[in-house]
Image 1 (cartoon, rainbow, N blue to C red):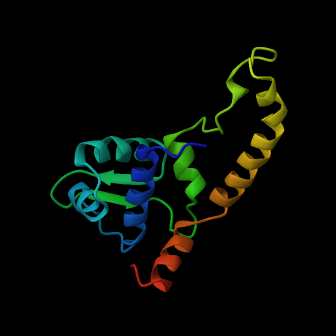
Image 2 (image 1 turned 90 degrees about the vertical axis):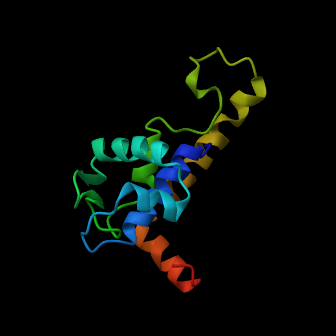
Length: 141
């Protein structure tokens, strides 16, 4: 699976929100500055996360963004799927049977499927609370 820049930005934005669970909305500008994300790009990402029920956004002077779930309930896999709903390891899976011109690719297909399963297992069992804990133990947060 290719983790795009957009997906990395989304994960960093959610990580930033996970650090502010005091229910005070965090401004887009603050997220962008803290995580070095271009603000206009971040607005689009937050809109997508809002549509998928990950983030709640409020307008106005007291507005900003908050997570709809606690960091302990929100997994990395949920955010990745929000940004890339059809994320798969790149192979001939998008082609119909018999269309893949690479015989070796057909042979490796079950390997890629196993690797994708293992990756999703990690992403779906890693919460943002886990990531916050890693940062604290390393002195990063």
